[in-house]
Amino acid sequence: HNTRPRTACSKRRCQGVLPPDLGDPANVKRRRPSLMPPDLKNPADVNRRRSEAREYAWEAISRFLAAAGGGDGLLDGWYTTAEVRKGGESIGQVDVYYHHPDGKRFRSKLEVARYFGLEPPKPPPKRRPSKQSP
Image (cartoon, rainbow, N blue to C red; front, side, top):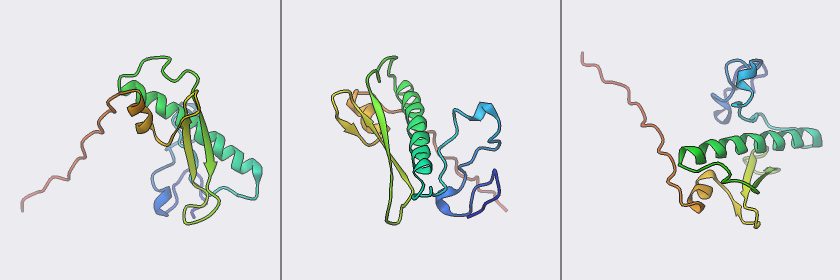
């Protein structure tokens, strides 16, 4: 892993994750949780990672549902939980779950949107490189 600040490591799971300026307050709300593996023996590090993931997920689902046509108050009573994987190929990765007030658990923003009968926003079309003739 690359230990230099403000740059992503060369491993596939870390590429392109860090914002250009971590010190800019404007980036704080949009910053993704760190993808660097947490120290699983340090409870404070694990708790910080879970907290970051839950906060990011809450903001992300709020934007996602608004883009799908959901109104304010749609998520009243809902909450998120996050678990750090402790083994396997994806050790250190965080799984976030969305919970309905009645206890039903959802694994993705898409599942939540479908629960509300919302049409998820379509992703922007991928840009293809233009072919240049010789």
